[in-house]
Image (cartoon, rainbow over all chains, first blue to last red; front, side, top):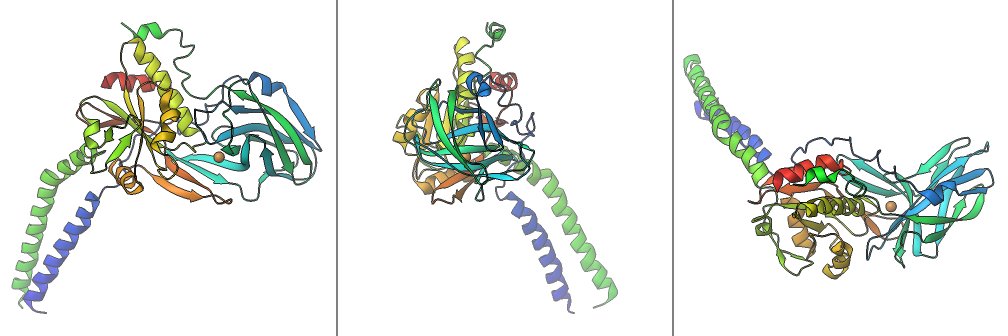
Length: 197
Length: 195
Ligand SMILES: [Cu+2]
């Protein structure tokens, strides 16, 4: 090996080192500080959904309760529907479809927060409701989603939704429309004077 | 080549390496860190707000501002964030203040300026931002947020996207984020520090 080759090798090594480190200069997601609530999803849904909470619908071995939707923003093309489904039977069931007059389609979705990123997926095979178990459809998780909404949802309205289960069959529930989520801090924030002058 | 020559070359190489490392630590790393924060939001994107004013990197200067990315087909993160912002603005209004806020769509295909106008209209201080898809892509890169189109079974699609609010000072420099669902008091502390 000639000395020229060796110097070339060393220079090459240095250049490789330099480029590999420079590559870090390429914009990449900066590490954002961890969230204070670890994603902030679990403390949601503590509001009082007065009407839906007391309503209960039974179909076959299934008990559906606590169902509600939320007031939509102006022009919002979509809305979510939430409920709790308990399977009191000994056969696994599955929510396979849903429909409503208020939207072109109703899909069964799962939402999750991963590293500050909101991800939503359609449950292609529906939502399993195992025997003897309770499945919650709630903000930040499973929900039925009204797609191609053809009307705005206003607090106090009701939304009629037909649910189709693999075993139990179909049933129609009437969801009350609850207030919008968010902005809970200021409303009823009695002590906000202390933030003022 | 003799052993001595060989050692000389290696020693020389190591010396250069050491020099590089020293320069790196002293000059480059601080610069990189500075650029990482300072350059957030900087880029040559040219978009439009729901006020029909331009939205560029210059828009971040002059007054502190908040920027978040989302889309109107958003199931709950974007409506909830707008609801939270409405809460912050109500609190700020008591102090005679307002936080200039930009809601930038990650879904320009469906979120036209007209469509976004009403969607954000009810929150004081919030402007929707949209524009051509390639300009939106530039903005997503400049703010280093995540956005990904995900097809749905029935032919439609949804968008995975970053769900935090970014705060910028009056020189347009990134300060910190407010996480999705962050407590009201914690968010207000961050905003108060800015205004
Ligand atoms: Cu959904």
